[in-house]
Image 1: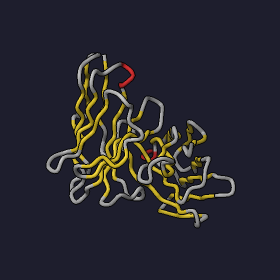
Image 2: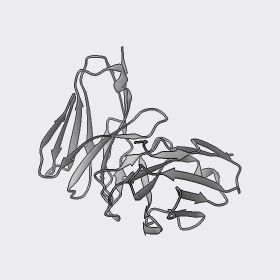
Image 3: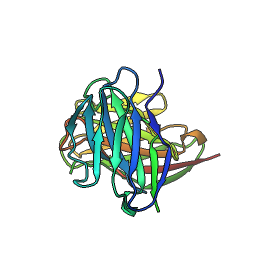
Image 4: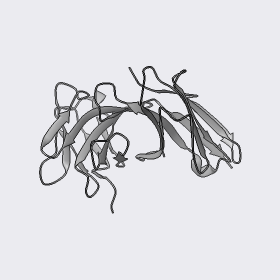
Length: 114
Length: 112
């Protein structure tokens, strides 16, 4: 059973470009969580999704950030018009149910904005 | 905020020694988890302790929870170079019933 997959692992964007981060949950998992880790910081919750539904986006910046988890395919975290402050590691976690006790993390995508 | 804060920020020990890391949090919780993150990698779940538990063991790991002091500790016994990593405590997110709050972590270096 493959773990949580994220791609790309590293992404470099210039200011103003768009960044798309993909997350494929573990097989059988229908709940996805996105977290952001700034340098020297812990992970910060961004958004929680189930298939085709955003359940909780209380941690998402109000502008430029969006997330989706379609019926088919990976979950996508989209950042429009990136700025240098968006440079961070973005981690995806998945769980079989909406349960904070059993979240499995992917390896992360490291976004660098130049 | 329910965010946990780890202490110390960094810890350097020799192989064979024990490593103790502490975590403090601010509001009532029903469980607390510890995760490990190797450099440049994702997080690996180590152990979960519930609010009605005071101590829990898993291999060379020992976790304690003191709800009256709102603190937890992670003890790694007989450390190995492979234990070198950052360690984070995680508490339930205050706004979301599903997500986790992480502290800034303790960076552990175990030298041979």
